[in-house]
Length: 113
Length: 111
Image (tube, rainbow over all chains, first blue to last red; front, side, top):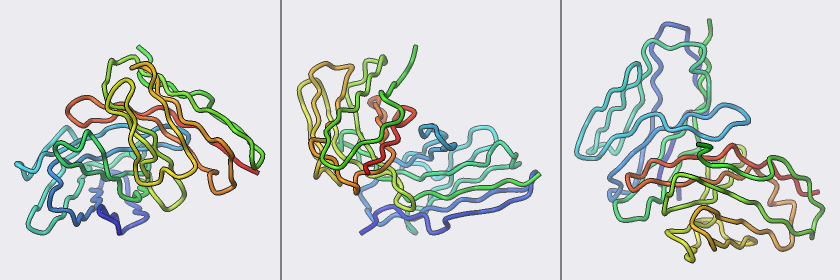
């Protein structure tokens, strides 16, 4: 039973446009959410996070939105750049869970020039 | 400052062979994790450690053992490798704020 779901395996966007990656979760105990970016043959790297007490967090071109009532979060990338092409993983954790992160299956983003 | 380093980066094993994957971190993190990544499956937690001398099972622990004899090192062992253990293995260490730092991965093929 997947607790963190990324229902779109892939997404293709034109350079300069907005990329929206979505993530749903089922465990209402999750209180911290993160996005990781992964290039081929490299380890995932942290991108941005949000605590459950917030509904938005912004860092440059990246914004994460959290809708707790819908158990849904999204990552917006504006404007998208070809270097953003990677697999994006959504992850969630429960406070006091010793840092255990539950990952979604990932969404492969392709940004076309 | 190397962050999280995994050794080796690639390995091919025959069914039934054993091996140990080493993860080393230089950030003085208490928590360390081993994940495996399979196509279409995301990252799944194998084992983790919340401090030197401690280990615990994750989501998919069967067929693996771990040890954390020193704070900076977390070892993942396969006693008798099986083709189902063909995967990419990632080690991670965590600050207290849940942001995990990952190594570059070990690509293991069991034939």
